[in-house]
Image (cartoon, rainbow, N blue to C red; front, side, top):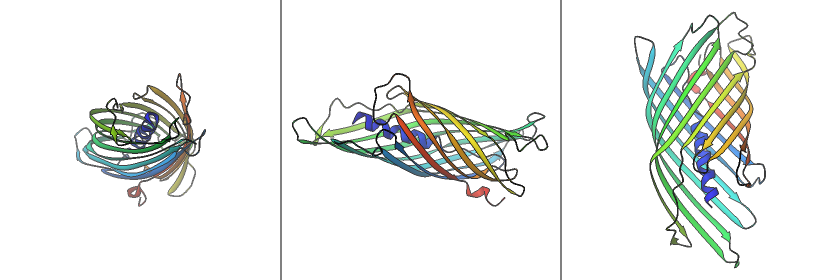
Length: 295
C-alpha cells in the first residue's frame, strides 16, 4: 500500500510538469489531460485532467511581463494484483506568481522566451485498498493525506530567426520543475483501526525536460512540428529516479506558440530500486491552448 501511495504522488507531479506559459501573450490558458499504463501489469493505470492559466498585465521597462497564475487538476489511478487492489485520487488547486520575457533578437540566429512561475498548492489525496491476508481474511486500508506545497517552474525557449533555415530544428525547449511540501497531514486505517506508525509521504520532487522540434512543416499559417522529448525526474519520497523519452506532435500558428500538442513517451525507473510492477510506464497526453488558435 505504501508503494500505491507513491504512485499517486508520482502522477500528481507528472501533471504539474505538463503546463507552462506561452511566449508573446499576456494571457495563457492550457487545458490538459492524459493517462498511463504500467508495462509489467496493465491493471496498474490512471488518468488526469485539469487547467492552467496565467495572466500577466504588468510590463516593465525591460520588457518583462509579470502577473498571476493558477492551476487545478484531478488525478485518478488504480492498481491491482491477484491478491490486492488499490484505488486512489488526488485533487490539486494552486495559485501564484508568473513572469515571462520575449526577446526578438536574443542572438543573430535565435529569438528567445523565458518564463517562470511560483505557486502555493493545496493537494488532497484519498486512497482505498483491499488485500487478502496469509490467513485468507480480507483486509481494508484507507488513507488520506493533505499537503501544502511550494512549487516552481522555469521554461526556456530558443527559436530560430526567420531566414536561417528556420524549418530545420526550429525550436529548443528546456523546462525545470521543483516542488517541496511545507505542511503535511495524514491519517490511515487498517480495518477501521488507526495506523499509528503511518508515515507521511514526502512529495518533494525535481524534474528536467528537454524538447527539440525536428521540422516545421507547412506553407500556410498553420504549421506542424514533430518533436523529441527526453526527461529526468527524482522523487524524494522513495528516492527514486526516472528517465523518459518519446515523440510529440504540435500544431501552431506561424510566429506563435503551439495551440495543440499530443505526446506519448516511455518512463523507466533507473538506478538501484526494489523491483515492482510499475517500474516502467507508457504515458500519453494532450494539451490544448485555445487562445493561440485564433492567430
